[in-house]
Every structure is written in structure tokens, then in C-alpha cells.
Image 1 (cartoon, rainbow, N blue to C red):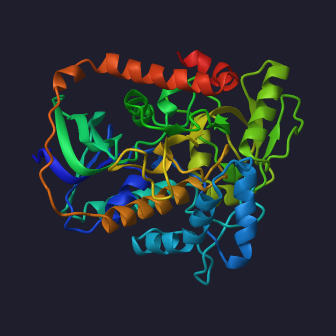
Image 2 (cartoon, one colour):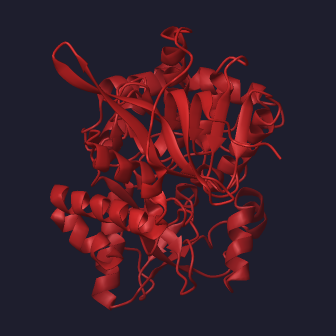
Length: 449
């Protein structure tokens, strides 16, 4: 069995879309270590149902830009938004070359759908499992590369941070990570570049669409080392997850269901909100209705859509609801809001570079400001891929082959008590959320401590 070596050119933490796509951008002569806390498939990218946005033509640029800015309450970074939109066609082209299949019409033309807060149809999709289609194809390509070494059930515990004095200032530099292997041994692994693609923080919440092992590890470690974060309180609560009393992650009812005409109903069977408003607006309306009727859920109805169309467009959602006892074609289903997506993260530039040398953060882990205060639906997969590619472009453009051996000493005995470590990281994260936005903390986080 292959063992983790003491040093690699690149370490990528996380096997979601951002981490996988980044790994495939590196030249084949770079040794790459990829680790994940669970199986390689169990990332939130794999769960994404709705789709991935694409600029269909330059005629749609201003509309797409405005939709993204409006959803983000105009707190977005304009440069990041422009870069993401302009790069979308080449990203989609690259995905197709990797084997990703999107829905097409009889003539082979790409089909587009629409979701909440979009002014037009610009979202590519694969049934209702777009994330699975993209991520699984990228995983296939990863295993074809001999230079990429993937280790499952391997957990990042810390970073190897060095402080260097340059120009009379102390600068931080990341020389690798501390990790716990599948056999529970702890070791320090050095690298020239460390890329964080660890996802969001859903595992810290009782109700979340995220996998339970995605617990904001990079955020806690960043707070411990004084690495700059941005917008840690910008946490998206998805308006529609299937209500259940079972433990585990909440099942997402995709934004695209409402994009295809599903309506929200209160217990009196009355519609109470425009379902295509931005997610935060719809979530607030649902919460108010739940409080008004003292109910833990409201209803979502897709009864206007013929059953065969539902089975074609939303087969996975239909099947899951049926397993829970609800026929989406015949009756409204109970839904409730749950934590879904994290717009904040380690503060980065438009190349995913953090304030720490050799440390990059992509996907949900990094924050370049593209989403602002509230992500526009189906921008997440696109954003992950665009800035993962830009990160590698910058890394390779500045790569230096000299000094291949990294020297770093660390006492790994500090990492034997996992429970104490994760408790500390969680408390750091929750305290920072509370410091930034106490109202949000009280409403959504207070029960998590």
C-alpha cells in the first residue's frame, strides 16, 4: 500500500470540484498529494443538484453581472465577478473535454435552465445531479494521472507556518501541513505549495445540506495562526430542504425546482412569496411563515408539472421524496431552511492567494468577494473552477525549481487529542461569527454550541 511521503511539490486538501480541477491544471511532472477526511466522492460539490452558470454570449454579460451583484447585495468584488463570467465559456469547454455531459436538445445544442434571481436561462445542467456528473468525471481524470496521489480518511490538523522577516516586516509562509493518516498516525508533510479546498462549515450546524465531516477546518486553523478571513458571517441558509426528523444532513430541494415553477405554500395552502427572489429573501419569508403558524416547515408544490416531466427533470429529487413518503407529482412536500453555503472564507486575491505565502484557498474555503453577501444560484461550481485554474496559473508562473528540500521541525505530540483540537477550532469559528454578526449568530448558530 502506498504511503504518504515526507514532501510533495503540491498539497491539495479536499477532493471537491475546486481541488480536483486544480490538480488537473498542474503539469504532470509536479508531485501532488490530495487528501480528504472521507471518501473521495463525499464532497459538497458531488451533492450539487441545480447546475453551473455560463455566459452564453457577450449580449448577456451585463445582465449576468447585474444578477450576480444584486444577489450579493452589491457587496461583491466587481473584478472577481467579471473574471468569473468572462472565463465561464472556457471552463465549460474544458469540462466537456474532461468528459462532462450536459443536457442537450435533439440537435446537440446545450440546454439551459433558470433558477432564482436569474433574469434569463443561462444554467447548464445534467438532470438534477450536475455536481455528481462534474465531480465524478474529474475524479476519473485524477486517477489517470500518476503524479497525483489521493489518500482518503486523512485529516488535516494544522499548517506548517514559518514567520520570515523581510523588509523589516514579519511575513508568514506555509511549508506544508500536519495530518492524521488513515491508520491514525500523525505526521508533518512538507510542500512548496498548499492549496486549501476544504469546503464550508456545514458540519458545525445541526441542520445543513453539507456532509457532516465538512466542519470549517481551514477557518479554525486560520484563526489560530492569524491568517486573514473575510465575511465569515456570510453564511447562506438554503430556503428549501426536505423536512425530516432523521439525523444526518438535510436533503436539498434544488433552486431549479422553483426555477421550473414550483410554488411555496403555507399551512393554509396559500402562496406567500415570489419564489424566484434571492435565496435570503425567500428564506426570511419562509421563517416568518413558520413562526406565524408555529410549524417547523411550510410546503413546496410542483403539482403543475406533469409526472413524466418531473421524472425527466428531477429524477433524484422525486425518488428521494418518494422514499420519505411524498409523491412530488401529487402533493406538496414539507420543506424547511437549512445551512447550505458559505460565502466567506480565507481572504484571497483573484488568484486564490491568501495573505500567507505559498498558501492558496479555492472553492468555498476561499473568499475573493465574487458572491458578496449572498450567492447567486449555480455560481458556486463555476467560481470554484475559475479561481482554481487561476491559482495554478499564478503558481506555475512563479514556480522556482531551486531549493527543493524544505527544512521544518515541529512537535507532533501536540496533535494527539483530536477532540480537544476540533473543539478549539469550532469555538474559534463560532466566536468570530458572533463577533461579526450577533443577530445571525443568535438566529442560526446559538443552538450549535
